[in-house]
Length: 135
Image 1 (cartoon, rainbow, N blue to C red):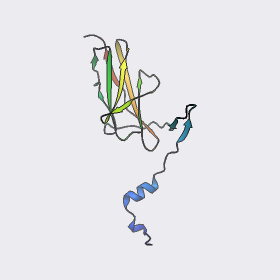
Image 2: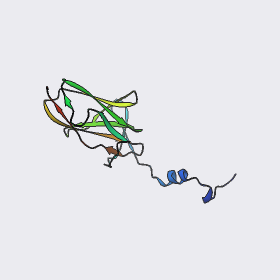
Image 3: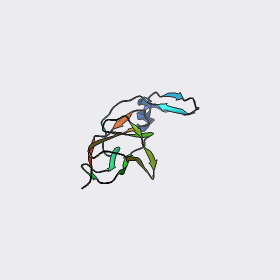
Image 4: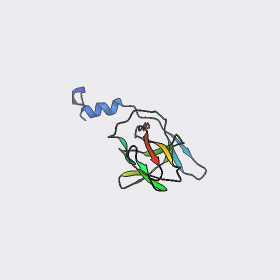
């Protein structure tokens, strides 16, 4: 068997070995479903990793419901918060993440999204401000 010297190790192998894996706890519900619980670490996030596609910043929402579209790079989960409310799960379809928003009141609203990465850390977007109401 050949042994690799330090010179033979590829840069990506060094990176993999150096990066610690996040510990995840598993919780089983009374119905037998297993959920992965991740520790929360708020990190700044770039638009290449996580972004709102729709609604646009400052957009006027004129209907009674709206489907938010989110792009997230390789997430395990994506969640959305409306006006600082608790995080709510988004659904994945066609390479995007979606949240069906209904029953909102007229006025200004702030949306924020976060993604759970493979390393067990949450990355948060900046706030997206929109206005609901009739034109």
